[in-house]
Length: 153
Image 1 (cartoon, rainbow, N blue to C red):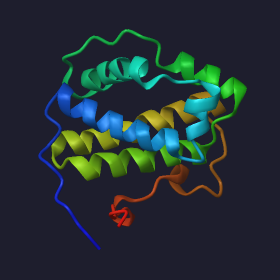
Image 2: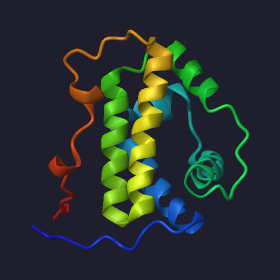
Image 3: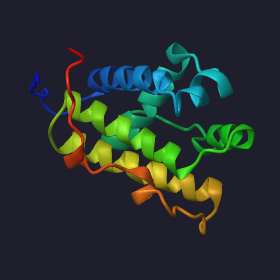
């Protein structure tokens, strides 16, 4: 098994761009959540990336302007194909694995925690506060200790 050391902490927009490109490449290819991006939304990564980078730069560093409606597009997707707790859980798994594979430090930890909060908030808002998560441990979130990046070789 090949292991590699993650780089330093997320330090700015350039790092976020790399993280988000890698994350969305994995998310688009994922058989569970990929169709939300590729089939339902028809997401163009080159159009989406600057917007989502603004979002994360604002969330982590307060250095970018982000004045878009983050909930609206998710609600539109949910109306076409319901996003389940397991879908949000898979998003979090991929987000954690991507961040962990590239960075270590307080900003990386904050990015992962913020991703979990966002996923939980979106799920609750879309499915309703009383939405059942029965059978989906922690909304499908996998503990970081259970995640290990392995080389494809």
